[in-house]
Length: 304
Image (cartoon, rainbow, N blue to C red; front, side, top):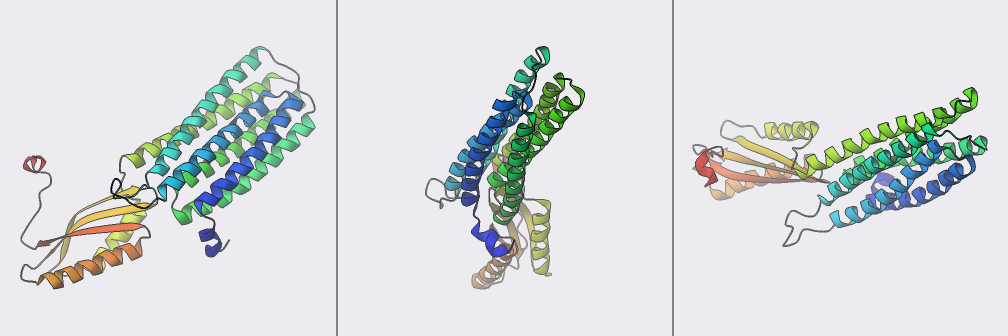
């Protein structure tokens, strides 16, 4: 898939596709559950309803995140994507609990499965569809640095594993005749998606708490600053944070006090431009200071 195609496939467009695919897989999996009576397929269908809700909420949050900065949000609305990731994680956790509840009752009261061949065909078909969509979404998410799209892709991968587990469980029931295996597999699948949901909620919380940029981005920032290294220039008090698709870096640049303001500002502009060119989506803010002046942010007096 070319870079031009990936750029054209925006997060909004991919989430619209995700909504359509979720509706289709709900129909396939619900039909599979209806004709077989498998609680495993029921758990698979329930997760597809979560996929639909997540895609709709993610679409809303990505749309908000694309809004330009305004007086009330001078740094933009990019953090809206973290709400999408957290909401999706919470829905996954809720679906996992519901699956475990339904499967526990089925263990105590096993029921025979019917027309399992058709159920397996429908489950495998919907799983293949979700797997293909997840593969495309991961690539688009990396291109656009969209955590909301990445969260939806991870959820779809979880859905694929869910379907795989269900198919294995039904196959085991067919091979052994042990009806309780269907419910046991459903519980195992639920535990797996519960873990995925907790990870999504954790990642969302870290983003809302102004987590530092990724190690590879920090390495790129340090590389650019080293290129401007000079005996008369030094950088310190570097801090970073990320908000959705955007990255922010703040630092001090010390230079000789006898330089003219125009010369100092020109050097600063060069450094800021180099940083923002090296890291897409980065906003660099540099404060100029004379070489013999230090800022002490850790002093208690600075908190007054």
